[in-house]
Length: 253
Ligand code: NAP
Ligand code: 1JT
Image 1 (cartoon, rainbow, N blue to C red):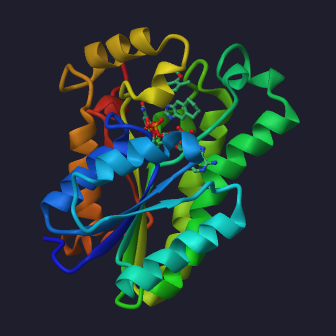
Image 2 (image 1 turned 90 degrees about the vertical axis):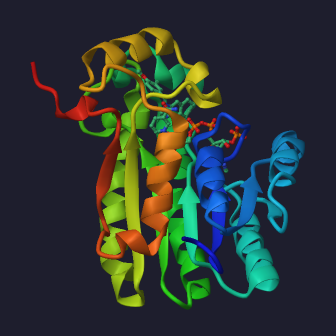
């Protein structure tokens, strides 16, 4: 489904990362992929994973460093001459901000969380658009805490609300270039980011018990939805948030 398409994947930390599940689904359908990593610490990890997919490119990109973002897109332009899709799977907030009460969030934690988790989508969309000469698709990852209060999610919920609104504004701006922008609202998954969070185990159990499908979602299911959204199968969809959460969000009492 993605033969002759080039994608850029932001946010692989290890093989449990949602970004890696997206990469696996897209590579299986013939996409050529470029991976970005944040800092030397993750370089080896990402290079080892990317080596499983011949013809891929690995470039550094900490989104707080505009020069690195520009260099990453320049490297993709140089190697492939175009870009068809981006998977944005990046978020960060200081650990202390993800416990206790939201009301105690510091200015610094708020600014950091919103810069890395929300602004980076706009930054990446602007840098990607000149390379998307045949149109394109941008997919980001969000969570239910954007719209309803989820204990401990705190400032990440506010950042995800900004991310979902950014998805709509970017879709409106970039539609004329045939660039689509959508978000996937994934149910909780036990990744590296999630593990660092207090109460993740009980959250997984809570959601599995209450969701229509009576289980937690798998990263591969999010990856397959990302494949749909970056492929021409979803050519009429933009600005949307699509739930991949075993139906949890539809439940009342
Ligand atoms: P993950 O494997 O830890 O991925 C998060 C990625 O964000 C990491 O690769 C991380 O790199 C990267 N990142 C953080 N700060 C960055 C920066 N300044 N520049 C570039 N990259 C940076 O965790 P994940 O669960 O797959 O998370 C991926 C996305 O899914 C996030 O947006 C998350 O909010 C979203 N999501 C997750 C869940 C869940 O339950 N797991 C549910 C819904 C949505 P470092 O490791 O170097 O920090
Ligand atoms: C980050 C972290 C972004 C954890 C994340 C995330 N997006 C989803 N999760 C999983 C999660 C986190 C909490 C939660 C429920 C799910 C940690 C590092 C920063 C970025 O609260 C109930 C806090």
